[in-house]
Amino acid sequence: MSKTILMTGSATGFGAGVVIGLAKQGHRVIATVENWTQKTLLINKAEEAGVELTVEKLDYLEDDDINEIVRKYGDKVDILSLNAATGETGPVAEIPIKRIKRVFDVNVFKTIEIAQKFSKIFVAKGKGKIIFTSSIAGFFTFKYLGPYVASKHALEGLVQTMQLELEDTGVTVATINPGPFSTGFNHRMYDTALQWIDPNVHFTDPEEIKKIQDQFINGGIEFDPQGMIDFMIEKIPADKHKFRNVYPEDVLPDVKSYEASLWIKEVGK
Image (cartoon, rainbow, N blue to C red; front, side, top):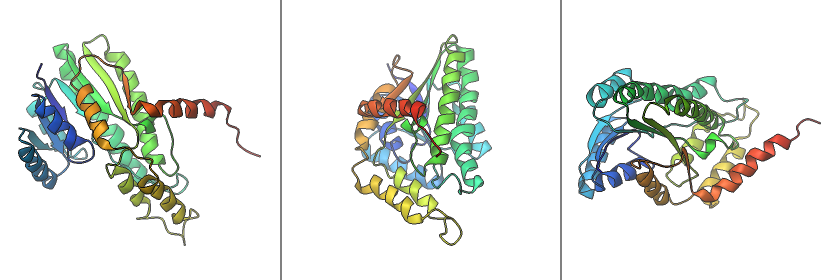
């Protein structure tokens, strides 16, 4: 059955592949991107793929953009896929707080604000679905990824609570939790620390951050994104699935082992 799906963060990463794939399945897709250049590029990609997309600008940090999207499409959308995110890296003990705040503004506060606006409409209709692109970083930690990891932990807590609060309203709430994929997002995120960290000022050696970045780029940690794209194309329009949708499932044992290890980990001397 064809559905109307609005997906944010559709320009890069998984987004472009997912919205084009959903359109190929016959869904009406409203794909939002952060800026006008991305809008032009995505329209061209859709034309090359032979599919029809409605592409709109939605910068999470622009209230006018949010309000216009809700005004135009709020009562037309069956499924809201909140996929947009940003990231910053650097040692938690030294990273400027304004950089952490920006990550939370996009990944948590504005993401939830948009979800709230659509929730009101969905609850009034007695149906609808909100699916958040979270991350395995929502229940896992990585060195120098503190701001991003913390934002996804916060998002997980809010979304889990929202699901409990809306489960009797006819509104479905769920998460998709990607592992590490070679979309370029992780590489760009590690670059952010190198914009501000100064060995003459900070005690963290920038070379240590570069080593972690190199592990992502050359260490075989990341997966081919096409598998994740296909997984999202399957889950986003589905009527029924798990609340938390982790892919690839191969990472689950590592995640569970990591969480268990924190209960017995000792610190101090």
